[in-house]
Amino acid sequence: MLTTINRGTWGTRTGFILAAAGSAVGLGNIWGFPTQVGQNGGAVFVLVYLFCVLLICLPIMVAELVIGRHAQLDPVGSFGTIKPNTSWNLVGVLGVLAGAGILSFYSVIAGWSVAYIWFAGAGTLSGNAQEMGPFFSTFVANGTLNITLTFLVLVTTAAVLLGGVRSGIERITKLMMPALITLLLLLAARALTLPGANEGLAYYLRPDFSRLSDPRVVGAALAQAFFSLSLGMGAMLTYGSYLNKRENLISAACWVVVFDTAIALLAGFIIFPAGFSIDGFDPTASGPGLIFVVLPRLFATFPGGQIFGAAFFILLTMAALTSAISLLEVPVAHFIDTHKWSRPKAVMFVTTGVFVISIPSALGNGAVEFFGRLPGFEMDFLTLMVTLWNNLALPIGGLLTAVFVGWVWRTDQAIAEIQLHGRRFPGRYLWTFLLRWICPVAITVIILYSVSSA
Ligand code: TRP
Image (tube, rainbow, N blue to C red; front, side, top):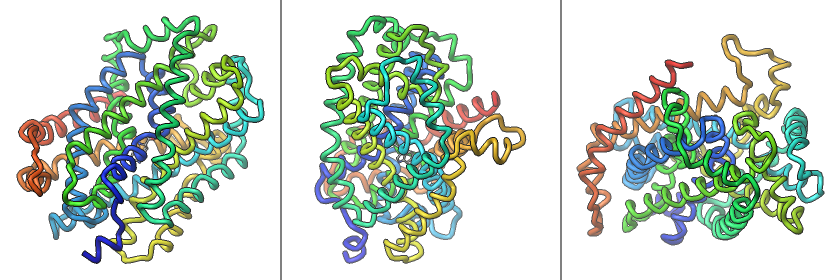
């Protein structure tokens, strides 16, 4: 089919799984997950997170892939084709906006990782954790540097997307993943032998159930699960649209979920044991700087720590890049498919737009001093963006996707798409039940519960 060829398709089956895993594995796993665990009471957050991944996100991952592969279009086009002349294509519009919104702060944080390649390699980082907190704060307060780094990240992401789907994404991911996993395993092995590691493990693995009464814990766990799995805004839908009809969607979805969750959990086995080996460590206090404070201390315990640290941040940056690509690809695919723009024009337009929105986030507290705080908001611009797009837009997008497949398009149609070419789908009744009932009800309850506390 000519249209399919022009849109690009995945080279191989592993190519798709790698690309989807490349989208999922990123800052969300290595930076976001430990940060959220630290701010939301440790093991109890981990437990709620795992429930959200299995019961809510996995069914929605399948739903996104199946919509995309059926319609073979961007999110707006896909919803619009399956249910023409309805407002359902607005779910796609929400996704396109969320892609740009999330990328606007994601590229700032990826910029931090770029800077730390340099800091680690040049020996600027010290093993003294007491110095690393103020060092991080000074760094993020440097507006010009942060804007430059954000720009660099966005331009690189755009350059990969200009190369199209297959050559760009598959190649980077294939190189990066094995190296990243090896390095993480080494770091975990070292962290677990540091003094204080047991305290860290207890914090990470022994739940304090009284924290469940805090609505923010449950809301944060749901949002983190969506974010880490790249769900709720049509990124997986778009990747599914490049899939060939013979592919087994269920096993692809399971692989991505298992892989992504394993890497997030592994990051926790690094940060908490290493963190608690620092005197007076408080996982709540470091906020977004958590890994940038804890990791330098861990690197310093390795012979050749400088090179080791630089290698780590290079891999983290690459992981962030393969995720940023999927964020940018959603709005770009939209302009190509729905508005018939050329790929270069779409990439240029969206990247420029995202860069402009990213500036206040890159300025950090500088923006707060310059513009003042938004009335009623006790947060900086980056946190505002996170709350809006990550904590609200993604779960709402996921909720609407579940309702769409469960009730509007109907799961029998979706199951027929999944079972094309004689593929089997043994869990289809469970999937139908989760998608129709558990996902919508649980997401609604969790959003209302966490908003009620705000
Ligand atoms: N999942 C990525 C991470 O963990 C971030 C990401 C990429 C994302 N694409 C997305 C998040 C789409 C939400 C939606 O770093």
